[in-house]
Each structure stands twice: as C-alpha cells, then as structure tokens.
Length: 265
Image (cartoon, rainbow, N blue to C red; front, side, top):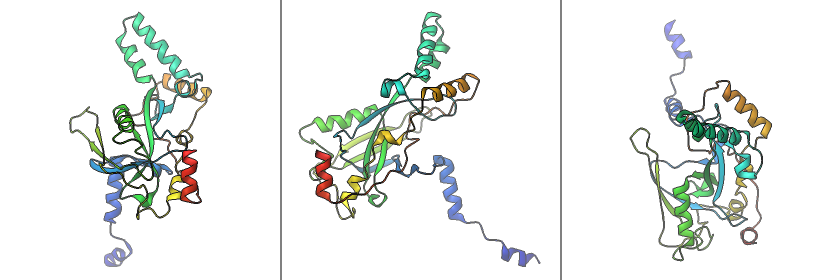
C-alpha cells in the first residue's frame, strides 16, 4: 500500500527549489519586471543605447521610507508640481532645526527626495533578452558623463563608433556598506549590433521612454500614503534602488537606417 502511494507522489523538483532559494535571496520579481537590470558581483559588459532625444542618462527623484512603498516618484522635483511629502519633510526639518531635535531631522532626511539615474542598455551575452533598464547612482553618472565629454571616447552610445563598457560591481561584505560600481570603456570602438543581435532596427525602436515606465501618483494619492505613514504604517526596507515600477516596454521598427535617422533627428 505504501509503495503504491509513493508511486503517485512526485519527487521534489530540486531545480525548482534552487529557483525558489534564489528568489528568496534576491526578492520576488513582479510581473513585467524583466526589463529591469541589476549588475551581479564582478565584471559584466554593457552597451548604453542611444535615445531619440539624445540624452540616455535620465535623472529622476524618488521618496523612500514612506510606508511600504519602495520608491515614490516626486512630483515637485520631477515636474514642478505640489508634493505633500516634500512639504511635510521640509516642515519637519525646520522644526528639528528650531527645536534642536535630531530625531526629527533624521526622519526628514529619510523622507527628502533622492535622485537616481537610468539608462537603456544592452547586456553583452544577454542580447536575446533585448533592451534592459539600468538604475545607478551619482558616482556612476559622473563617470559616464566624463567619458562622453572626453574626446578620446566621445559618444559612447553611437551604434557604429561607440564602445562597450566593462562594469565591475563590488558588493562589500561589511554590513552597512554600499556596493561600488566601476566603469571602464573598451579601448576600441565597436558596432552596437553584431551577430548576437538579429534585428538592430527593432532593438533601437524598442528603447523605452523611461519616464513612462514609472507610476506617477497624484498629490491626493501621495497624501493618502503620507497619512497612512503618520498612522504608523512601518516603512519599507531602506533602499537606494528605485528600479521598482519599471515595466516591460516593446515596439516594432522598420529598418536600421530609418531607426538611426530618427535617433539623430
């Protein structure tokens, strides 16, 4: 009887268990998160892609630590609109300064909008997965602009004369320390689309409008979130990463020349 019952029971799927373990370590991804890309420990090679507006290095401001929300797009810093979170944080900071209240000032700092940078990229070795969106900090941003403005490199995103970048991501073992990103362009220019890219035109056309990838909440919605925060909703785990909200974006193209002309127009 026991043997017959065993025949009906499937053995544990070890590969599925490994996948579950990795998910528990890295955080469960929401549907549509496949466009987001985060570097792994060590070296990886990427190519920053050109955008139609000529600016592939986008800066956005987010509020963190407001309830369980990992990152809220700031309407004031990004669009010049009213932001109840900014108003509350500024008021809290002034009160902290006036009353010499370090707790209030610390809370205000946690709520102030912080900037984050985004670029569309192609990850070498993962070309079949299409365009990814990479989120990074100010140090990497300044390094990238430095390379672009250096005549020895110039437009590193150019499909014909640009260059790939070797990205080294170092995750320190010390608690409380932040990961370190180092960027080094290849010495020789290279074409964007080689044998690993089946359709260069479609790749270029699939570059998303990054701002459209984030959920833009109204002032009323942000006030509701802030009210819940005041009522004691615990903050989300502190984070400097705002890739949450990046959704899969795809479109189709026609020919490589047409796509490149539109990018340069």
